[in-house]
Length: 458
Ligand SMILES: Cc1cc2nc3c(=O)[nH]c(=O)nc-3n(C[C@H](O)[C@H](O)[C@H](O)COP(=O)(O)OP(=O)(O)OC[C@H]3O[C@@H](n4cnc5c(N)ncnc54)[C@H](O)[C@@H]3O)c2cc1C
Image: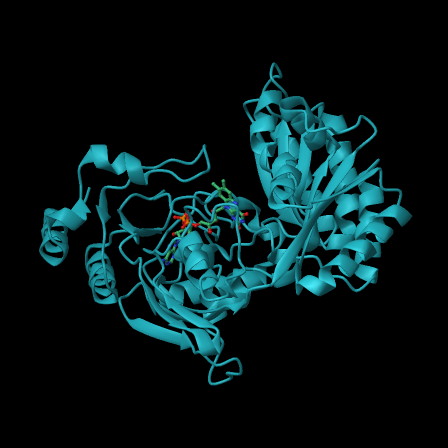
């Protein structure tokens, strides 16, 4: 229960229209995109500047109230779900693009800016903000930084951390700190920026970000290639890289995913096709046809079954159809899925898929794999099917063990949140975990900022 005095102080600070404590309103702040994790806060506050964020944190510290930052609420691991109650801090009023420094390829934004809005703004001046998660239309820059979000262009352009040059952060105890700068070369002090990137709102609240953008590529080409097996597709990926071409996008669908999509939208997959690669290259227009040719030759040397090239924007949409229809198509196989998001070094993707096939066989379950081949990120969907029994949770643990055996990571781009806390020890050994705990305690001695996330209790 929140202390009445705490509530009154928040109302004095923000006005009654920017905080609410009504149980009905709390429902809207009780979930993210993970269907299993829900928890209602006792209050919601909506600050609009760093000073208010700092005051709220000082009050929370004075009254021992947990605070959970919330961006677009699109996370998959319960990161913005207030599992220990307290208040949710909605960051949607921090929605301004503060500066576009065209000559230095820098933008300065508030964290509540929706990623797609930033992309559109820089596109207008011939520049590009590369991180491109499928949730761009509703995820925020703050949420992307907190999760170190990836996306479909990561194969060439990397992930969010590669574009964060500096941050303004309100610490749990209310101090306001600034990290990094606009400079490409900057070794003035510790690299604190990266400490906050990917920290899932547990170390501080981001109130401003200095981001790097790049020149917008002049053109792109899109193609798909199908193979009998994922091993064949993997050979093709190695052959493509060996040509020196670096695709911006390199997505894959395995056999189960392909069959599901074919059943749902009949896009023309053949029964002998067991893997699909969706490939995009970008750069200067005159160079791209040669790159496409190199990719086609590499695929042909590896037994490609069908190679399609988009000739127009309409064709491109067509080639993306299978990938885009996937979530819906998988729902036709089963309504209940256990999802995972893992990564392995890219040459080990076929080995990982073989291990997943064995797990599926052992537990009589269906496993569908798809994701971002170019950065080793596999999205795994596991189910017992439409009329199957309860899901054998042991299979999930076996997936984690397989990831670790292949030197992979149990969380690739969706974070640890509250759903993977108990598995973090598989990737992080005890001395390293202790160091992380010491950082957390130093910054947040009472453990009030986004408690219950990322780290298991020591
Ligand atoms: C359909 C769909 C597709 C997706 N595709 C991708 C994808 O391709 N790649 C990918 O990486 N992810 C993807 N995601 C996951 C999700 O969109 C990302 O994790 C995204 O970064 C979350 O941003 P958000 O603004 O919604 O944050 P939220 O879900 O609101 O919060 C996420 C975390 O960020 C913290 N946070 C939010 N704002 C701040 C702040 N200002 N300061 C400190 N901490 C903060 C929260 O406390 C929480 O821990 C997808 C999700 C959906 C639903």
